[in-house]
Length: 245
Image 1: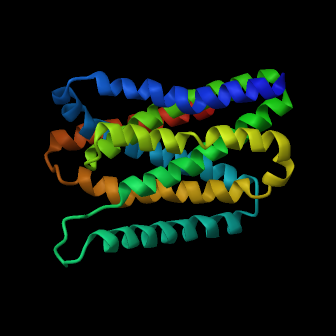
Image 2: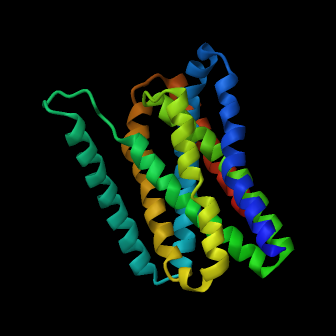
Image 3: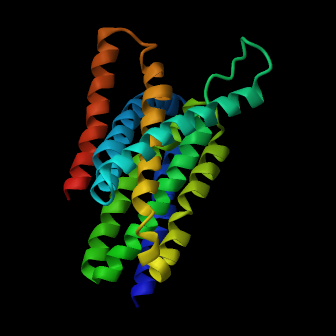
């Protein structure tokens, strides 16, 4: 019975969140273009808060803090190299217009993050059904705004609606096998989870500060600053609220 609960909530936490956020596709193109800059600002807040207040906090508390921070630093450097390799692959001139590898980095980071969610769901239900349901609902509530932000980022970076949806779906599917693996070999996985969390946090921090924040700086009017700041803080506040629950 516990295994069934784990499967159900891992599906809801991955595919369910993606389907909900994909409702964005039903909006008119003009509305989408208007919303994307705001959603990118919101995504900056959710990414930073998820990384620093959620993933990194858990990584530090569940392992040697110094080693976890080494993994965080190593992860940031790793994603810098990863982005360079993608740029080199696409560019053959100094003035190449391919400026960012945000999409692939986001997908890889999200896959790590969703893998952790799957293991956490399994661990929670193995503790008790009630705790499992509470944690599962929290993960779903966290995934919906995050996946919506990820979807907006991919569209902003030039991905088609179909590709953005497909890549988001693929990265989210890691929750399901992770939950199954967690159910059977959770004890051995516990040793590496904090470091996977640290690497996932690194990807979110790198994306927020290296790729998204410069885009926000392209608009310099005071009114734009006010809107961006409000939305960034809203993203942070959303994650704080979810974590506090």
